[in-house]
Length: 473
Image 1: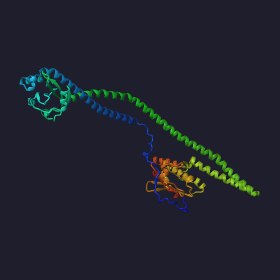
Image 2 (image 1 turned 180 degrees about the vertical axis):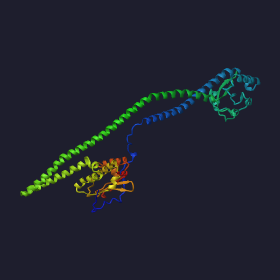
Image 3 (image 1 turned 30 degrees about the vertical axis):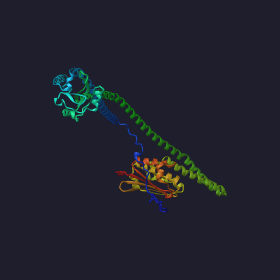
Image 4 (image 1 turned 120 degrees about the vertical axis):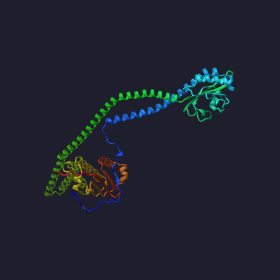
């Protein structure tokens, strides 16, 4: 169906850039989706796994540090006990001078009561850095510089523990035994001379203790988390069921609201059509007949007034019918898209705007009902803006097939135009419907473009991916 008038050419918008009116999905809220029980349960499981991993890492670090401190404290305590119970009673003044008998006595005591799995090396130092005893005889008599920590212990008696630096020269014979914990404290010979008592312990004890503490900590933590999950699962399941029910009720209410709105619009349109429109039509005929009678009776002034009344009534009827099309386009469902689009031009023609229409039947056949409603809505909104804001003398509307699977609706006018980018970015009052139109177009998978500039008219282009109509039979 077409009504093509070639008396006027299209407005000069071909050189203007297209501005996309379709809004992207990422710029708007995503549509509401039904709550998936398994999705929520999966999220809970993933969250629980993350918590367990976090607890594991943090707990492991905390247990390691705590176990390290405890092991160091125990080693310091044990070394201090050995110094008081084993070393001090065996220590003689002659040990400082390297007396063989004193060295042998100390060696017997150390091997009998100290060396073993817990201690792999023992040294006794003078404040000058000379080793006067070691379970490894090769070290006896050697001299090394004491570190600041060792000298501080001799000045201020205390037991100190630290990880042994096996790269220091005095620790050359301890290399190859793994990580060692070094503990030292001062002891005194019978004449009151200070010496430094030093033990070396395998660091495996610290690691083993950390493991034991972690296993205990992990067992309590994991069992608590699992118990919490078991308690929360039925609660979450029940909440999800209630949320799904609420969503279903909401969807039903929305659907019902749409149906009620459609029914109410249909009822209002029918009431207006069968009541005021018919009465106004009858009044128009009566006024026109009365005008002829008055003119025949020689009363031209009254005839002119009655004729003017008839024109005003007919204008009211045209406006009322245009309003009926806006309220409920019955022709879209009853007569099809082509007739409905033609009906949209009635209001523009009533305003004195020339409308040129070219609707391809092949294009209509390639649209499904949902796409037909989209095309109708875009045409309705654009033509409504043309009538209200454009100040146009002519408008054009074409619906055609482009390529193999695209249906294109183009609408143009020779009106005042507008700054398309600015209006779409910040719609002024009266133009906000264009933003909503872009949202609807995006939801339908179509694309809406506009080309306009002040004084250059306006051109709209809606591109819809077509669905081939199934041939009858």
